[in-house]
Length: 176
Image: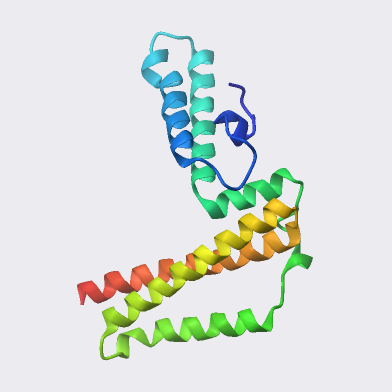
């Protein structure tokens, strides 16, 4: 294993959006065993430092590859796509309107006659939307349409944030 190896190669996976999660998990555990600190207890400082760097790379690679949003971003980066390009923001009025409506619906949960029921329905809707976007992202990446893939990533990011806000609201409602 070399430091700075791409994450797919590190875990012996093909460079693709769809991955075999079981294989990823198995390779992760095997790699972790090879760089476990106990194996380097009697090693020199440089060897321990290299093992720590490798462990950090393994952990980061696993974090990225197991998360569809992070994996999509990583695939775009591997293709040389600039994710920080300000000109790539998409002004889709329909999606902007959907964002406002979903935020309003989330804000209105507290005053609903069945707040938890309404919230669970919203969370299910967020999951459904995110799953559809994940499929669209896989398709766009598979066809090489990086601009469309970036658009889907932006939308997935919105739904992830919205789902986190819903989880926080759920915790507040349970405490109340």
